[in-house]
Every structure is written in structure tokens, then in C-alpha cells.
Amino acid sequence: MASSSSSSLSRVVVKSSDNNLFVVNKKVASQSQLLKQCIDNMEEKGTNDVILIPLSNVTSNILTLVLEYCEKHADFADDDNNNQELKQWDHEFLKKFDYATLNSLTMAADYMVTKSLLNLCCQFIADSIKDLTVQQIRQIFDIKNDFTPQEEADIKNENAWAFR
Amino acid sequence: MNDSQVTNLPDHTLPQDILVHILSLLPAKSIGRFRCVSKPWKSLLSHPHFIKTHLNRTKQLLGEDEASLIFVSNDSGLLYSTQLKYTHHMFDEITTFATKLCFDNHRFRSYHVFNMVSCDGLVLLNDEENKFLLINPTTREFKELPTSPYALDRHLSNTISGLGYDSVNDDYKVVTSEMFVNVYSVRNGTWERADSSPYDHDVGYRFSPGTFVNGCIHWLGVRLSDASSVIAALDLGEGKFGEVSIPSWVVGDREFAFNHLVELGGFLCWYPASLLATGNTTDVYMMKEYGVMDSWTKFTISHSEPISLRPLCLLGKKQLVLVENEGCIGEKLVMCNLSGGSSKDIAVHGIADDFSVGGSFMESLVSPHCTTEAVTEC
Image (cartoon, rainbow over all chains, first blue to last red; front, side, top):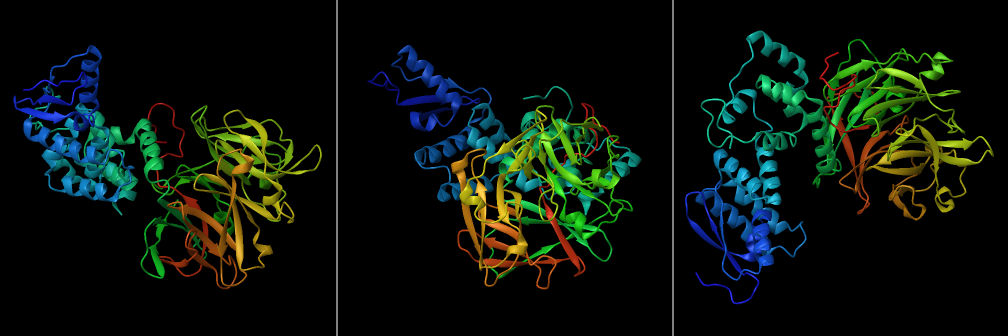
């Protein structure tokens, strides 16, 4: 690993929970407020070494995805937020994943404080579950039906407006 | 990650705060359905705090792109609603389906829905027995309000003057005015008499209820001290009366009282009363920054012949939904594109032909019942 010659860092190394290393350039890393904060702190101290940021909560396959998102969004960082091409890319990006991956990605975005990715994932999950039945929701979220048959009939009756 | 409690939770289970975030993005109807998933989901999705979070997210994300309308069937006296969304419509006509709403045995007449007011998904209107009904057309919850103990005249005091949200006390308030102004608190379920108004509120050529914008209910009024025409405002949080200035170029030569106020896209707007329909255009004025005289902006609606119109709501900032020729032959619901000038008819299905259009509301889970801290099911 080469150390940077100037006092400001150009790259950082991020370590996943399963101990894989990712070299990330600063502009890309700055999409995550968590990584940006680490970089800012180190720069304030005047460190010239490449810094290593361990992320104990994110596995390498999920980290790869977060970084892919950050890289794309770093390219558009100077554009306004309403870029249609970027919106299209976001949608195509999330469309590929199964529910478990989406959940992990959402949690990683939350942990790494990548707010735009977190909002994007939440909206995507909301859009994909909004038309599901009660039974399908129980399956996807692995929730046990703890109503008695009478209680379930009552609550369905109370919310009959939502089943029409 | 929280894997300590329940067995069998997969390691991709979302933490509660993210789950709440996702669920607050759902349409009201999905939330009603998902209350039946389990007991924890039921209590989460019925909690007043969640309902407020959901309301704020809806306003923030969809407030401008979705709106619903109330109709009354003139045959059955029953209410109907339909939801409109902002879209790039390809066809000349927009089709929408109305859903029947039942509120026990209450029946309504066209002038009841005409004078309805709404705020955050709640709708206030009178039924044919002149009782006050506060309804949520989305969840079908409703509450019949008691008559004010301060009422001097039963008919007058049951005339709606406004509905709005008081952010100081986190409360929805119903306002009526006769000689005195009476205010009903939805949170407490009680009436109170407000300070007497320094304005006469009943000056229009046809009575219309107040318009709620920016925490205040607005009326066209006459200042009692010097008989000058003003937009009078009651601040629901402070309980105080004030005025909103309107430039003379907006008022024009027309008699002040021959105009109406309406809320469009969260802004206070001013438009001419329909009996004055003469030209092929109608000018609507919008106060883009509340209380700022210079921010009044004109937009012009073109039509092929002199017609009357009543604006209902704004979708996606540039599509205005309005009723043309109300109460006359050729009455229709129209979506008018403000930037392009083109307009399209809205065909309403699912309701018998003889119906009247009320006003607009947003879909929400807000309850018309008194909501103190605990979830009450009155």
C-alpha cells in the first residue's frame, strides 16, 4: 500500500466483516457519511498514511454493492438530484436483488450513513410489498400470526376498508 | 443486529426503526391491511405516533402528486370518493372509479359536499339533518360532533366555518361563527368560545367556509371598525384574529365579495365567483409566500367559451382539477394543464350519473376521534 504524498488523503482502505480489503478513492468513500467522518478525522490529525477503516457489520458481498452505488453516485455528485439517468440506474441496480439482499443492503446503508441509498432501499421495499396479502407479508418478514381466529376476524373487520 | 429475542429470526431481519421507515412509506390502504399481520404490527400501525409519521411522509413525498375527491350521489344521498394521481396522461379523457362510502344512516345533499372542508385527510361536512360529521373517507371512521353549548341559533351555529390543524396544541379544530366564534377541539371533544371576531365573515354572495393555510383559517370579511374589505384570518394556535394583505391589482375592479378563496397545493388562492363568467379565460391568483404581498402570482385558465369554474386541487404543481359549469347543463370535471394550457375531461365511473362534486382531501390514517396519548377506539 503506497502512502499519499500530500497531506490530504486520496484513497482509503475499507475492511469488511469477513476481512476482505477494498481500496476506495476519497470521492467515492465520501458518499458514506461514516467513511467521510473517518477521513475528516484523520486529515485533521495530519495523517499521511493510507487509513484502514474496519466495518464490523458489513460482509464483503454487501460492501461491494454499497461501493458500486457510491461509485455511480460520486460520478453524478455535481449534478442535481433529479438526474433521470441516475434514477434509472438506481432502479435497475435494486431490481436485481432478492429480499434478503435488499434487507442487508438497507442495513448496511443505515450503518454506513449513506442516506440516499437508505431512502432508495426503503422506498423500493415499500413499493414491492404494498400490494402483498397479509399471508405474504408474514412469510417475507417471517412473522408468526399470534391472533386467535376470533381476534383475527375482529381486526380484519375493523380494517375492512383496506381489503376492498 | 438484534438476534437475542425470538428464535428462528433470519439474520436479515430489519431493525425496528428501518421497518417503521419502510412502513411509513406505504399507502394508507396497505397499512390498514398489514394491521392484521400480527399483534405487534397491529399496535405499531395503529399508534398515533406512527399515524403522524405516516401523515408527514405522505405530505412530503406524495402531497403534490395525489389527491382524492368527494362526491355525493343525488339519488341515494351517499358519499363516494376517488383518487387522482399526477401522471402524463396519453389520452384525451381521464377515467377514474368512485368508491361508495357508508357512514351508518347519514345522508347528504349536494350543498353539503359543496361546503365541505378538509385537513390532513379529515373531512368535515353537514348531513341532511344539519349535524356535523367529521369523517376520514380513507379509513371510514367518523364522528358526529355535539352541538356547541354556546350556540345561539341552531341552524347558524351548525354552519361550518373551517377545519384546521393547531400545531401549538397538536389538535384538529372545527370553527363555526355566528355572533361569536366557537371552536371545537377534536383532541378534547369540547367546544369553546373564541374571542369575538373584529370581522363580519359572511360577506360572499354565497356562503363558503374558511380556507385553512399556514395554521390559519381565512375568510373574505369586512372589518367591523371601518367597513373595509379584507381577508380575515384566525390563527388556530394563538386563537387570535388577523388579516392577510392582498394587492389591489389582484382584487381589480370587481366587488371584493364576488371572489372566493381556495387552498391549492398548500397556497392561499383567490379566484372570481362564477356568476361573473364572461370571457374565455379565468385568472386565479396564488400567494406563493405566505403573508408576502409581492408573492401573489397570476395563472390563467383558458376555455373555449365563457364558463364558470371552481378549482378543487393541484396535482404535481401544474395540473389543476376543477369543476366547470357547476349545477348547469354541461357540468364536468376537468384536469387543466397550467403550463401547456390543454385540458382533459375526467370521467367518473362507479357512481350513478346524477352526482355532485365536493372538495378534495388527502388519504391519511388520522382519526376523527379524540386522540390522547393512548390509542382509543371510541
